Image 1 (cartoon, rainbow, N blue to C red):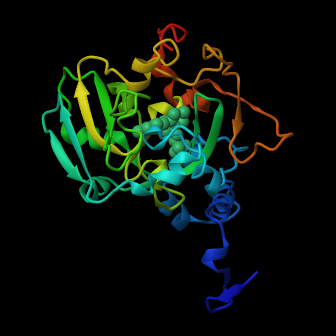
Image 2 (tube, rainbow, N blue to C red):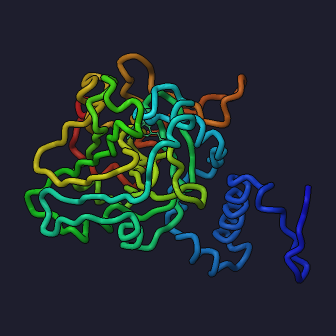
Image 3 (cartoon, rainbow, N blue to C red):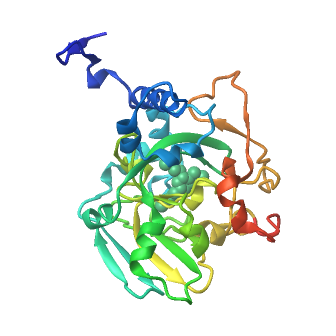
Length: 313
Ligand SMILES: Nc1nc2c(c(=O)[nH]1)N[C@H]1C(S)=C(S)[C@@H](COP(=O)(O)O)O[C@H]1N2
Ligand SMILES: [Mo]
């Protein structure tokens, strides 16, 4: 391996030779040592946004960058898992703006630069599980959606938040196809949107989101099936009625509004009891058991007290 001296005895591999996941695994190793008191790292903690790391299970390894960017769902660019990586280069992410409106006191249109600056961004390692049975673990970068919600001051009548992805037939080859009713729309109840876990993400693995992962800004809702995490957002709208979401409209028996990860509620066409982790799916790799709320029950179970999660799937 080529190494380069950075002076005073420091030797470091060239950036081009280390994969993003290697760098991140190293940082996490430090972090776990820091947490156990093995090394003193006030500075490191400050740079990494400490508390968010508590959300990950110890056995979770980061999903390799190439898997996370090469196996995607982004139907605007095709239905094959390799299509987004192949086709999403046509997406134009600058200039970009996000309209935040509906039942709020202060409707605002943000340029991407303005939006990125409304709160300090932090790194958060989240698991995300697709309803199709695969999952991944990634270091995302962004801030809680609650930071944005606070600034527009929802009215008392606002009960839900609707998220709209860009639908540009000129740059997104499958917008206009009959796969879904475009634009891609998702929604959360206001209290779900305000939960600190709900992330407005701008980056992943220490760099801006790749187009196939939803550049320049997306949602990451880690306790729900992946399709709730809408990509390439252009509008966030506060409503009184539950939003009509793209997948729910396309197949209501298969994709409910809530879509909380729940191993006990099977998809009508397959079991949801287990999942395979991207990057671990060799022939003999064991499947993982899917966890209730994708492992985030401590943070979110209280949102659903008294609700029948079989009926409200
Ligand atoms: N606009 C838009 N957002 C989307 C999708 C999509 O097709 N279009 N697919 C969803 C699904 S089904 C999943 S599993 C996740 C996948 O995110 P990833 O490609 O970053 O892993 O994005 C979600 N967000
Ligand atoms: Mo998905």
